[in-house]
Image (cartoon, rainbow, N blue to C red; front, side):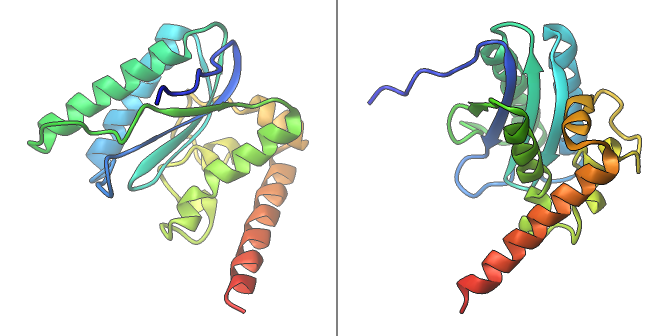
Length: 188
């Protein structure tokens, strides 16, 4: 069955990529840095704005703003370059990503905030850290001004929509608390 056509017109997109099966997308920090270097190349080449990203063990989430129809080209370049790195480094062959990248257009300011919270909370939900700002491999701490690890990230649209870094932190923490209480209730 053919895959549905994608919406890759200019705008803000949430994109994600998963490793094949239950394999790791990142084995260690060397892999994580290699992916970030490729991301920076793609952002520079296509004139994208990287709003956020979060790397977890089996997949990655990304929020980017594209000025044109370059999302498929940039994601292909990013996935191909990183897949080659991963396969060479880990002496593996064959398909590395589960399927083509996923993407969804972000259609409003509230959608941007909700998607942003979803992306940065991935590491907490995966059990990699207790708070999203503790995860080294997410742009969240840079956005809040706690760290300056990823200067290529421009989250000014998210910060403006939230009303500043403190309000953004409150919003993300409220989303985390609501997810935690929903998971507590599911066991009742």
